[in-house]
Image (cartoon, rainbow, N blue to C red):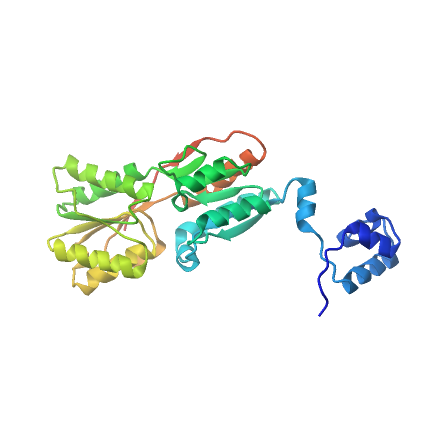
Length: 331
């Protein structure tokens, strides 16, 4: 097996007895070099197992023409749902319009700071889109002190940077109000990780809606999004509050179906049980029981992420905060 050597264009040109510009043209398929000489140069670099120094090329241009999107380490969960799949597609579409590539970067759950450090130091992208819930204050400080343009999808309590988000508290308030209007009076809440700002805001909206109707508003369980943790949380809530007649789910996708499975295993009559979900998911339309869903404008948010990032890359000033409303759908 041939060993890989870090030959430079200058070394290749000396071996081929041609100018550096001729080697560059031959490698890049440009005009200005005869076909015979092109083939001679290509054979030479092939025999030498030459690899172009992409990092040096990017450094010379000062741009990689690539943006990055950081995703959680649990790729199977992240990409199995609609939310991040649509965000990725929207960001990729905006990047393509500008002849940019999109690089998905998996966050190391054990060493999240190292993922960011490596990305910044390697200069492998011109900018980053980052889910706010993946950052802590230390990581945010490191990013802010670097030259790397970045945009947050979502918000964090410690961040004052360019963010794109949905109005979580208002959306949760409106969804819970729908349950109250339908006559449900013993309503619980199943929410995601308590440390996420959007979880806190959705719980706040839930509590406000019930308090406005003088209903008990502290029947709340937070959980990780894994199937095991979610189902255990739902079972515990049903044991503690057997008289529940409705649930507000502060997230959707597979998370909602984990909840549905437990309700059905407990023999709950879903046709008379209220369900409101902070997310719209196409399979909801095919369920044999009604679901009130809050449709997030996911594609618009992903597009806004990318547009804001490209403004930062071009040294322009994007909005510091872009907020979107949800649309309430009833099946």
